[in-house]
Length: 116
Image (cartoon, rainbow, N blue to C red; front, side, top):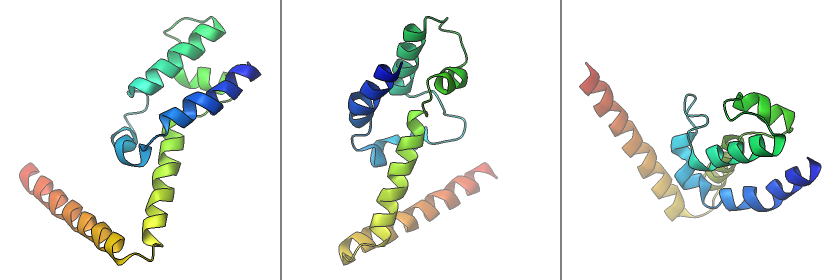
């Protein structure tokens, strides 16, 4: 199992992290835990290696293999990306970040207004 963990961190994790700061945000929601196709394939691989049923609980399999869900790594990467934007010396990057935050605020107001 140690070999499997090493190969996962060396190959699968690096490939699964490519540009995750941008595309993975939809999978970082609380109730979206194992819906990503990468996570589904990873869980299927681990269950086959362990020789257990595909209906086994995902969290139990991850704990047995001493691994974290991919969302953990995506979240950490998104936070690092955000912190780099905040600490950036580039005025353009800061302006883009402020515009994104403003746009998000407007979208939230529109969504809240539609729900009423």
